[in-house]
Length: 251
Image: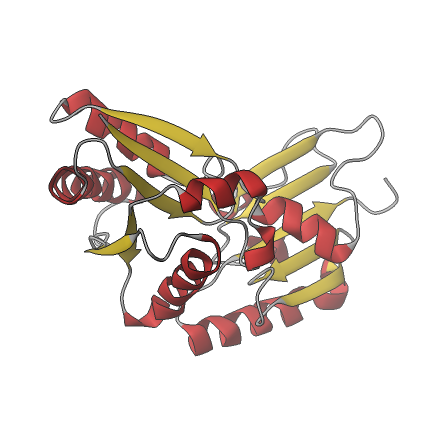
């Protein structure tokens, strides 16, 4: 029986890796890395650094997979479905070929596997196809949401208030009804600029890395600055990991 570990490795700082994750890294025979192209080569470098620091270098080897390109010509939902299907076929073939029966494979997931990541859905699909049997272990990690709050020195929640987690795509439809505190992920369009300028924003990019950027204030004070800094950082690195908390003033 093959065993696969889906390991949450935190938001970027190798020291965000938990003891449970370190133990899983030490047990891994084959790490499967997804190569997203030259503009994201530093993500591969950070994965390698984590494996070298915590894994058993006398034991493991690394298999790289070229990530399928998502079609930008179709609708968002259709493009994501097609991309997932291509990933299912690629991961199924690669794991079956590269991981022997009785060995342990590892997939490293930024942040936590339960937050805005497709790894678990893809493995559910691989299992349903029935090409081979495997056991799946999930190791939680420090999410970008947790890192954001820690780096800004704030609590995500307020007494008697709920916390809403959403995406920039959804925020583009307006402020969530009944919400007082909203965490937003995957907002390429900086949708917060269309909201009340008195809302407080706590924004962070590349959390836990040497390139970390933190900005906070009201949207009126720093909204445009965040958009400019984000655009420049993405152009410089070729990719962007950012998230932010919006909070109603005075709540």
